[in-house]
Length: 350
Image (cartoon, rainbow, N blue to C red; front, top):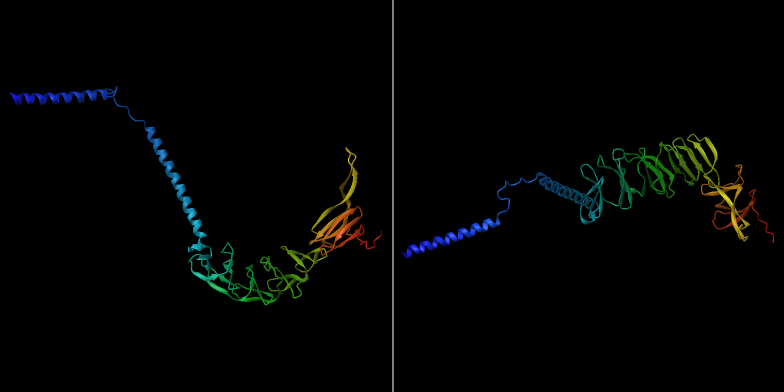
C-alpha cells in the first residue's frame, strides 16, 4: 500500500511537471503559430552579397596601392641595400652601376654619374663618369667603348659622334670609341647642350675662341668669326658683339643682314597739371619718334622710320626728353648722353 502511494505520488509529480511545461510552451508560442511561416525575401541576400563585394573591392584597391607604394619605395631605397633597376642604371648601398637592362649584367660598377637616352633603341650608348674621368659603354653589347682614363669632359652621342675634351681642346669619337675628328677646337667652358650635331652640323670654336660651324668630317662650313651662333636646319644666325645678326647658309652666303632681337618703346618725363586739383605733377609720355632696339644683349637707337642711329653698343638706353637720351656703357655703370642723331654730348655747360 505504501509502495502504491509512492508510485501515485511520483506520477502526480511527473504530471504536474508536464502541465507546467505545457503552460510555458503555450505562453511562449507566437500568436501566428498556427499559420504557415513566411519565406525570407531574397533581396536581403542581394544586399548582403553587394556589401561583401564592395568591401572586397575596397580591400583590393588598398592592396594595389600598398604594392605600388612598395615598388616606389624599393625604387628609391637603394641606400637601405635594395637594388632596383631603372633602365641601364642600378643602385646598391649608395653606389651606382651601369647594367644591361635586359640581362641585368653589370657593365661598369661604382660610377659617379651617367647620362643616357630614354629610348635605348635609338641611343644604346651611355656616357658616364668614374674617378673624375669620362667614358662610354654600349648597354646592348655590354662593351665599354671608351675607358674612363683619358677624357676629363665628354658630351652625349649625336648623329654617331660624341665630343670629348683633352688638354683644353675638343675632338669627336665615333660609336666604336675611335677618334673621328681631331682635337683642334677650343674648349670654352661650354655646357652639356653644346658640341652636339644637328642635321649634320655642330658649333665649335677655334684657338682664338671665335666660333663657326663644322660638318661631320670636321670641315668648316661657316668660318670661325663670330661670338654666338644659333643653328637651324638650312642656315645659321651668326652674331658678333656690337654688331647686327646675320642669316648665313652652310655655303657661307649671307641671306639676311641687319637682324635684331626686338624693339622697346622709349619714354620721357613731362610736367602736367591735374585737371581736378590743378596740382602740378610729373608723368611719363611715350616717344613716338625714337626707339631702343636690342641685339645679343646690347642696345642701339633707331628712329620711327627704321633708320639706324647708333650701332648696338650700349647695355641700356633711357629717354630724358624727346631728343635726349641716357645710354649705359658696357661696364654697366658708366653712362653718356646722346642726342637724336646718336652724338655723344661731351661738352658740359653751366
